[in-house]
Length: 413
Image (cartoon, rainbow, N blue to C red; front, side, top):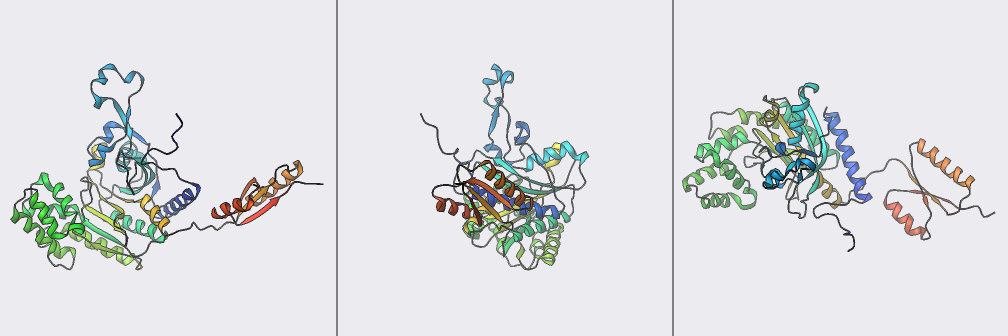
């Protein structure tokens, strides 16, 4: 039986051209977030299974790649209980590991702490277009700040990063989980069903208000409750405060949103828009306050999302720690840039020395000495054998960004 020549389904090989783009985007992200004071951290790919199954990650916990116990730990008693066979697993996101990281290291970190993470995560999902089992996540989080400074910084930094990568006219949508819950409570939905109701509401852009109402009724909720619920989302309003005042006297959440929108618009130079969207839900139930997403015109998915999760870290740290984060869809951004034919800009000269077989010792020394001098000047120099089909070889190298070629032929004297 021969070796299988493809990667595991849902995981990818990346060719040099792919890696040049990924490294360029990574570099731009790191530069931008560093300017906003975010510190790069790293967490292990593997976490204790108890952390990963702490009911912090919602449905993602069903997709964990579990790692079996080894050696003596894999006792005969464990074999009778399949759930006890694993003691660790691959991380399915970066937020849960960040919570554990902060709880372990908070005494060594600044307060508030601005964290930046970029790394692979794994989910035992069903692979399809745009959905992988191994993929890169890129998160910024502010821990220990309960004020809207956190939201403004996160939106500003993420928007600046996307603008730097050439994205224009994107839209930041913002809402608050407290607003979603207040409407659901006002209409009489059971508190334990809020997430179920929100998931249906999240389909508004696909099936419309009438479709959402029909689906809620089909789930067994009273028709008058469903009609009242949808009346809030189909009413006319000019701003978040006006929308919220129709069902609550507590305008703290909407006032925060108005201030965030106003401040971000003041900083924005017209590259993007930021709007209140009362139908924005975000899938993770751990969100406790402000939530936001970024959508790009012409694409049917968001390219970034996040929100405030003030209760998560306390479950690891034992004390309440406010937290807010924003995650960009790294793989989606890469896909969009490739679709647009984006080429990585090259500032330095890239030179190829093509060496014919049989160069003398003196010629080799001269060639490598020249290559070293050029590299010391900051230029990129590749030394490689000269192929028989040199035109095909040069075409491949030109595609990789090399522009200058120098041939070294053997001394025939």
